Image 1 (cartoon, rainbow, N blue to C red):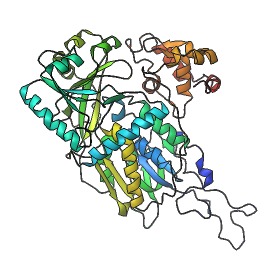
Image 2: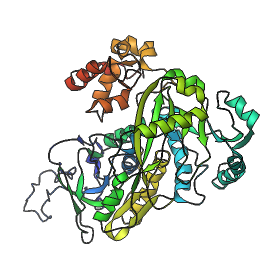
Image 3: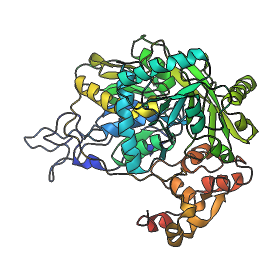
Length: 524
């Protein structure tokens, strides 16, 4: 810290980029600036001897999903030493990578709940952030379709609920109006509630954008780093010593954004206030030729288990069918099942019959962090300088930036001296959506570097230049799945059958230079 700085505040030298580590013993937090010129560490001057002991992190965030990375990015706005520890080898590797990718309006949240407020605020924040840094978003709108008289009778109450949540743009549609908007809908639909501002978003680029901006702004991201012991409460302003699979880490404040494992971390701190039940959602991804079948997100009338099985377009040009809602005991049960997929096909046949004639590109399952409560479990523990961020379900993507701002405020309430905020340098993320031109369609990029015109993955039109850029990025991938989430390589109809060897060779060789990327920065 600087001589005049408050305890825990980073000095001017801390404004450089952070570190991304995946192996080895954890490095210490960024060291304080050195002693004044002309004075050694043990000088005999009247001043106190210079203390060369590395300072602890001011805040450590456990979990690098969309919520954890959003919190890290928000904290990076202050002169603080921030670390993120994540058990997986990449950001967004858990619930964040396997969801329905909807940017919600919050129209159907529980009125007055914390979730309702943060989703409403988060939607505005994330929509603006996505436009600023290039996260793919498409405002397609949603239709809550009523298939029987009971569901039809529930639509006015859902409209009133939306108004209590501050959203007043819903429209009730009769059967004819619904059919005009979605002519391929299955027979028997009686009406719908239209929610025009529901959107689809890229769930992969969002946490990567947060993490990229955080690391470039000084946050240390420690991957392959599982928290095993949260240590004991330190007296006064003393640091807590965390034990991880890669060694010890000292921190003054702790944020638990561990997703499915948030209850486990909470119990390490002595709390037993909620239990996470993994709720599996299986989904089917249909080929791009199915995209013209649907114009909106087609939602059922929601139940206590969630929004139910939907049909939705994606920003990549595919169509999603799902998810199921299965409460399990195993927090690692992310496999699909024959029964689950058969159930989805049966429901899809009613919603959009022609969809089942289309080719299936992939099937996957994700786990949501359900708890006993209908609301987020975000709570400060001031005496421990600790904040729990639990029970963040499918709306966490939408609410992520608002959750981050809320948690930062809670940390300040717990005694963290934030100081004055600063603007973060903007980031521009690679476009992997279909709304705007992709690199293979841009003559300016190809003219600057032919690698952007050299296709590697033909199904998804991914170029050698995009793969090279991903491998040279701030948070590079180390697996083919991580590379797919950054570029869509191996994510198309053939699922890597033709391009898999070439993609893996590029990933493992890491022999692509940065020069080409540097030459086209102006063209971006």
